[in-house]
Length: 304
Ligand SMILES: [Zn+2]
Image 1 (tube, protein in one colour):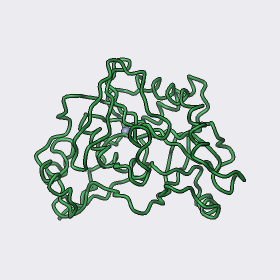
Image 2 (cartoon, rainbow, N blue to C red):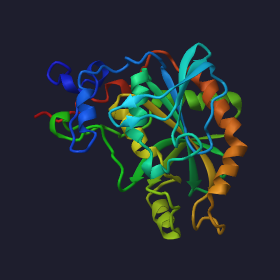
Image 3 (cartoon, helix red, strand yellow):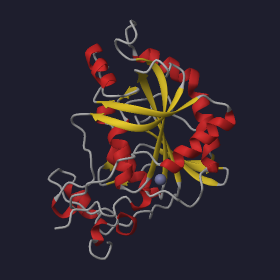
């Protein structure tokens, strides 16, 4: 495929695209670019959501800001953990300064690809629609339903950049999911192994009627950030997994008024467990991938 469609082989050539936005020139500059050329290297990344801002477990951590065709990344910490090079990217910027609908998901994922990252473990604060998934518990995302409205969803904007229809039948990497499940067992941490996540646009919380509808769609959790993050990772052939921290019952499930303060309090109380899960799991992730995430673009590119 790479011979027929060299511009689409992200692993070797970097992403080539044109689009009508003011990013067009920047994207043009990246055409001859090869991913993984950054001086700082990482193979695994943690994307920290609400309440997960710092990494204190990385040895010799240094911070880097990456230039991408979509703008600058947030400051990414890169350091060593049990012999693995690990990057930490705060999704909402330092101190939660970017709301979910304005997170520059493309810049974030591009920056990680540039660092050489092949696996992403993300955290996501979520409301629960499932009485079995209670505030304070952890759940591993298994499927998503996308209810977002206005976010750039793809690196492929047509024209020279081409069109890609990526397969997301199983959007989360089975190999990394399995490592997280086994790690939770070892740590005796309660982790719901299969949660279906609805991604709402935000930044407002949902109405009671919306939650009723989302529940009927078969979702367990609702949050504001996992799409398009998960999809963009797949387009870059990066393995992606996400651990949800249940912060509250969603609108109408609880009679209480929903507040971000409540979310942050719950996060603060559970942050150490999430960190422990992630950082115990990281050294257990096999160095060589045996999943198919690394070949996600094969057969996905529209031929012209
Ligand atoms: Zn994978």
